[in-house]
Image (tube, rainbow, N blue to C red; front, top):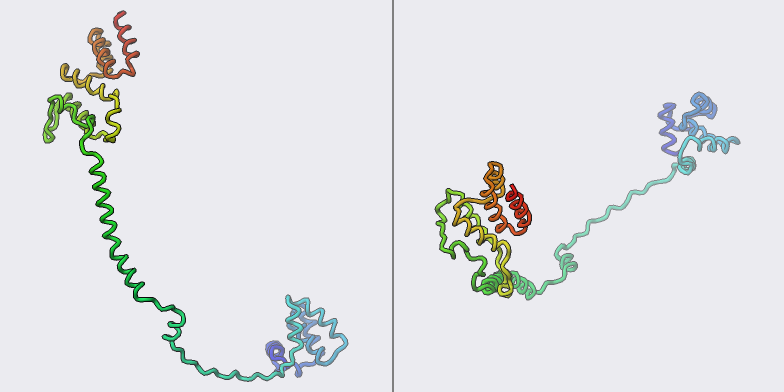
Length: 263
């Protein structure tokens, strides 16, 4: 008898096998537990063994209690009389790992290893030589300093020592423009002949000349202060100087001068 069927009998009826249970006993148990699939399965198996006429009807009813009808049919058809032959123990086979590695990995020629080591060794030296040649090319590209990067105020005889910090407004303004000129970008040598004088350079020259004469900073706010104080002549002078310093706003300053002259 099937071992799984006998295991159900032991669990439910505390008997050794299905043969010890009568058909009437199984029918009464199934009627008391109509929704118990195991009871229906045992009843079906009992009807199969005794070749009961109601076997097929009970079998279809049992299928309703299980998701896999094929499994139920296989369980019912198993007789449980098959004998199991023990499997023969296989003797472990010794594996030569060295031979396997030689068969898998292709032999590497010693000359290839040496060439690879030489290439890796020479690579940093080659990169260093390339870097040095590039630095020498950059140095040879510009052999003299472009004109407009020269310190304008130093060329005019105005010198400020680096260790001395200016304390007056004129000195601060002079140093700021000097630093600006020193930090301007260098132009290629081929463009120096065709480079026109920019408005920024003209502005610096005018500012330097006026600063040397007046020794103070000129701003539009100063002109507005003089105008509020009623000193229109001073305001006009400042606007005239500002029109030279800022050519783009010369029309605006000219209009302000005309308004002040009407007062």
